[in-house]
Length: 231
Length: 270
Image (tube, rainbow over all chains, first blue to last red):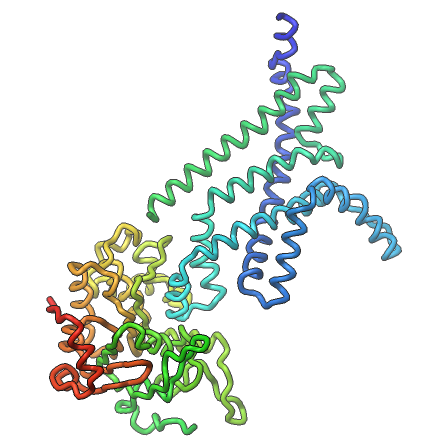
């Protein structure tokens, strides 16, 4: 019994919390940057799917399909190792990508496909009357999208966007595989040196789950306030 | 293809001319060639059974529906088309169409207020984005027109907190704030409960009395009779009868019109 208690002694993780927190900051940083790319690109993809010419619909749908089906890990490794190799051969100059930019772009691409699907459904659910009222007043398509549709879609889709964001944040846990010093990187380094895997990995798990629960609560609170006004 | 001569006598030239307007949805022809002139400061009601094409006709005027053929002239200028350098008729760029639409206010059956904006923001939005009015001035204009429809107290509410009649009055203020040349009403009271209909009809009536040019698609026969100078009766995509309300309602010549009138109930305004 005593053995088990000492195995699970979380004070050990607490003692090295600054390392885990430093790692968590890296996860949050990658999350924030790739989420920004994913949301913006997702909006572009969704508009292209709905309103673009035929070829752009096919292209964006194909892109989204590909991105939703490739494992994030495979894409990251491909972009980090295979792509620079390919480009070096093609251009004849040595090309390499930093781990952070690669991770941010790769996760941004993959999750843009999920966001695009969410936005597409959201745009379709917006009543045509909303667009018509704006068009009848002389607003341009871009203004209608930016001022009328997107704000409504974002508010209505907040719960789905939260779910996609949670998946994105969870996926940042694979970043240590290309040497990014995130929570899992710190945890595995520590557990290697200190041979106390249980409290350290438990600490890492708590950091992920805790961050997601707190962030979700904040998002839900804000959207509930906004919905209250609109409904 | 001659342009009407608007330069010489601008005050008497029609504000809107419809020239052989046709519209088909797939194989179904909804409008079968409609021509009409709408004089300035007139109130024209369009009546007819559902499916007669009256809403489609109204929506073709500001190109919410694109006519299959025919022309709509707003103040002598063709809506949706521009004249090329060799005098040819070219589809208008969206910017030109948007600025033409801004001259025509439209009020919809479902109000279509934007739920994420307050009443005041709803009315200010097009002033800011389309007219590029400075925000102070836009606010004053918006407040003025909200007062005009009796909604100034609700400026900071969100649409969901308003009754249907109140929402429709805000929608009217939103259209009026653009100072349009003509107002198009597409069954503006059809989705309102009877007790909320009158507040909207009263607002429309006071606009008519101020000399606003209005085209009204409506089921409210008593209102059409009392407020309009002219009534168009549409039947199966054609103008079956066209005349002052007294003629349309009291001495209907067309058997279709007589049949239509016998099926609609006369309700009172006020």
